[in-house]
Image: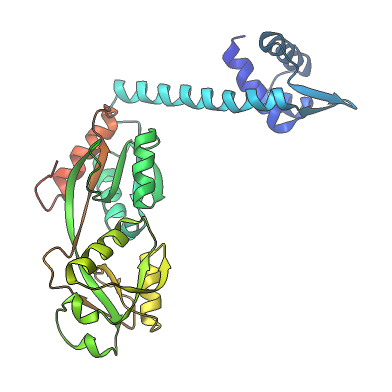
Length: 299
């Protein structure tokens, strides 16, 4: 038996804290499992369980080993997956983090198209806020991020996919809702519903308000665009949001494009510049850029 086997068996035993149940799950005999535990305890130099009334209870030594055993086994599984992807890039798993606001549009469109192109590829998906996507990329928990552009992130490479027009969302009966476009300065006295910091669209909102010479009076801060639009429909204020996709507009909300030429949001793929992508992720990125890019890449 290898140390790896012992670690895998230890994790199951730590999760069940029951020798017979663990042995049944592992399809081994209790004496075999007991001897493996004894060898592991001799190797680490400490008991891993407290034994009381013929029951096992994970002790502080065991808790430390459990944390590292899970991490080590996960790293080994990831290495095996990357090796498999390197041997056959048409298979493997792409770890993709994506924005909440792309979950009903761009992200499923990308995944649907790629599945038709490479059905053997699987995905590990994380729906996150923009700054969380950056953190996942840097920590190696995601290969690629489908997100909005963050200026000044020099360690990240970037390819534009689309530009989203930003609009001012107003209650449909609002006096400012009658036109086709709107200068943001005209809404300077209105209460604003915004995203909370440090979400990227909140930063864009603050920048656009500064360009318009206004200081927004924030009535409510949210973490989702859909919530903002619902509160606008309820009359709590106005909000800067991306132009809705067809049939996705919030009932009771009027969306007016802003006249400021900077009133757009860049959506694209991001990855860590100096970290080599797994071949399966590299192929996925190339497919997405070729199929979905609406503007030239910006790096």
